[in-house]
Image 1 (tube, rainbow, N blue to C red):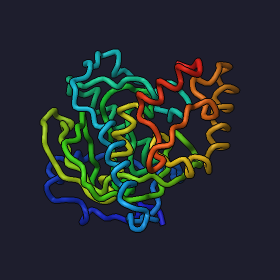
Image 2 (tube, rainbow, N blue to C red):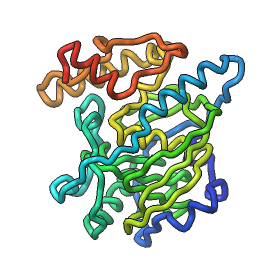
Image 3 (spheres, rainbow, N blue to C red):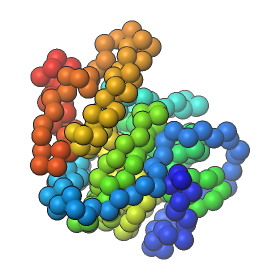
Image 4 (spheres, one colour):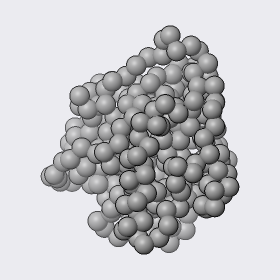
Length: 288
């Protein structure tokens, strides 16, 4: 069962609802399953507490609170229809700038992002995944146009995350057809700006927390396989190589990163690297 149909709006904290962005023009679209999370949640039990500790440490490295460079009008420029950026396109690793202009162009960008999300039967999408390197994400935990709540988070920040970690099967539009287990904190306390620029704080738990963390990673240039255990990563190794070859065949360029030359560390729980660790290994391998 896809999580887009697993969690209904009644499970979303009431404190969030006033800040959700509602759109009145609900257009029909064709659906296909790509960007999703499956409801095969496994709570940490006998795997020992150090695995959760590793997840918390890994998450903390990605939760940046520093002030980022402000996006210019050129950074926010886009042309519809938007297309999904797939791994290993360097756009997915690029720095995403902070938004400080809340205008009609931003609303149009949000509309287009929702269009892409629903068209692909997704429940979440970040701006870099459609080629716009800014701090913006959209999601709807129900995943159905006209149902649930459409959530827009601009310049989001994480203030706190739970000690309890959950293993969950994730997918990503930027990795079509690839699904694998990722452990993340079960809940997070965040703050962000809405579509009008008003900042608010909210607690997220369960699926909304999971979707937020996945999309927030994108805003930090972190991809979901960076957070996978060595064992899980081995299971999708050839699929990642296939995407790298697809990129080279399509662009005629050398892949900017290669999974087979990625320096792999053996952390206590086998978790993937943060962006800085990934960049360091790419440079040592001759890829930047």
